[in-house]
Amino acid sequence: MPSLPDIAPLAPSDAAAAPADDILIIEDVFKSFPGVEAVRGFSARIRRQEVVVIMGPSGSGKSTLLRCLNGLEQADSGLIIVDGIPLDDNHAHRLEIRQETGMVFQSFNLFPHLTVLENINLAPMRVRHKSEQEATARSMELLGMVGIADKASSYPAHLSGGQQQRVAIARALAMSPKIMLFDEPTSALDPEMINEVLDVMKDLARAGMTMVVVTHEMGFAREVADRIILMDSGSIVETGTPDTFFTNPREERTRRFLSQIL
Amino acid sequence: MIAQKVRFRLLDAIIVVALLGLAGWVYYRIAYGIEYKANWGVIPQYLLRRDGATGRLVANYLVEGLLTTLRLSVWSTLLAMLVGVLVALSRTSSSLFWRLVGGAYVETIRNLPPLVLIFIFYYFVIDQLMPLLGLDALLSSRSMGALRAIAWLFADPSLLTQLISGVITLAFFQGAYISEILRAGILSIERGQREAAWSLGLSKLDTMRFVIMPQVVRRVLPALANEFVNTIKYSSIASVVSIQELTFMGRQVVVATRAIFETWITVSLMYMTLTLTLSLFTSRLEQRLRARD
Image (spheres, chains in turn red, cyan):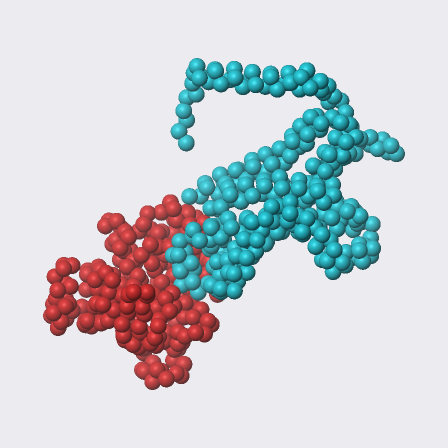
């Protein structure tokens, strides 16, 4: 299991009046692309060790929001603070936030020219300046955790989709991130491989990792989410615990969404 | 690849007969039509000669020329790769300034004949840049050993200026084409690769170096190999500015012996030794890299 870092005090900033428990602060984030307003005034605070699942119809802006959180997309306006570090024009902040957040993509995005082990070792060695032995020891531990230690010297092309996604999770964890962002991690997988990835994510949640997960997997949301956020047209429709969200939603829009996917 | 059984059909027979007929006709024209007496006997002495003092065999014009072509090609290929990488990076950079600089360079080079370029570069480099490098002062202060190493790696000190300006010209010329190949390669890498590297906290430089470029090189290796072969071939235009490479030496030998066909056929075979060896080497390399996918 990944060891969780000690809780560091928030750096002083105008939004840091929040309780030190909020590891991720999102305030009034807007992001538009030519012709589309993808995110329209999204605000949320995410506590340490909380698992938040974001759902919504396609085009509701959930992936864009997630990609704003580690600066893959630059928000047009609003405030994003990750563990006390504001995501702003300062390039050092951006790099630091990316080191503290792990991201798992729908299309895995493993580096095809590197072996599984080299994929996982790359960032710890280049960014954290670990020695190869140090990095490899940790990588093998993580590969064991996701259940594919025997594939360490394979190239990604020789792995199944489910195995590739588990490597991608291990690769993100190798940087010992404080938050893990999942962007539809099972959407590109064949049905029989979805569970092996979800199981790894459940283990991670139980180990106390802070997670923001964009997914359509109801079972996963019901089982591990502390909070579910329904997004539509770039903003929040409803927020609730799995219990109230699935059984007793407040909003008509939520009921309609649930009836479409259940 | 699917192994197909080779069948020899009537059409193949006709083509073979036609080709043999053509070869025979060409031979006949050369042998009798233009009263040309082939004299292959003069060629070997221009490849190797016996040193008067020591009695050992040493390289003569043609082999000297081949070695100069080799040096010229190796150094200009290395420099062209450097130029190509830098220009490709500037053309794919997010800064408009660097994109314009790179674009202007590539368009200028691509739209001029190489022969014109080499004249411009040669006179500019020889007249303006070389004195700045202070090469003469540098050479006069070297030991004999260092001079011999320079002669082996580059050229005889008396010919060094020419060689360096030839290298620079070829490198800037080929660099433009290599940069276009690399640029296309960089643009062909999926966005997700860059995003995955960034989301791990890798800097832009590390992303390029460890994630993007290794994949680019694999993808464009066949096109790059072609460009390396082109560098060897284009090095022959350096003969017009008195760089004593293979083509230049070939002309000298023709003037001395009047053995036109024998000399140029020999020169062709020598060029092909270089280019085919290179092609063989790169296709091996391609196979080895492909074994991973």
